[in-house]
Length: 158
Image 1 (cartoon, helix red, strand yellow):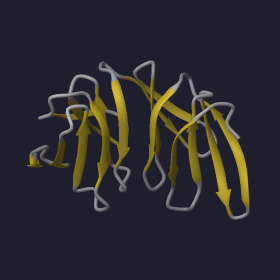
Image 2: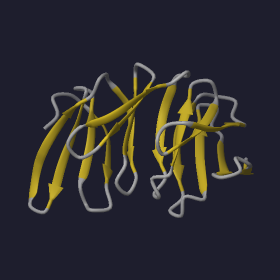
Image 3: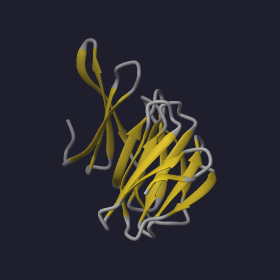
């Protein structure tokens, strides 16, 4: 179990459950057999986490993007902005990172910048991809929801 509050839970396509806790860790749990397995130390406190089909991504209080597998942290990317939330496309090919500067940063599956989406008037509080990875939705502190074309970055609903 975690030693502090759980901030997010995700499920990989193979059924593995991943949870992020304020004890600076990820906990990998299996449904078959039902058990809590590996605890993975994070380099800093998680703000948010998401899972794709096999990809695990965490945004931290130190403005880092942390990539993990089911048994270890695999890489870290220092961001040049303050992340608030993250979504991983089901295809694992794209990330959407909500930011405190009212933008959504689109990144490739390795964390490299692809586009910056601007439409919101408040810090981004949540992001999510459609099941086909073609659209991304974002919500902000200003009570707005925008649905974007994930490839072109064009707002579809604002």
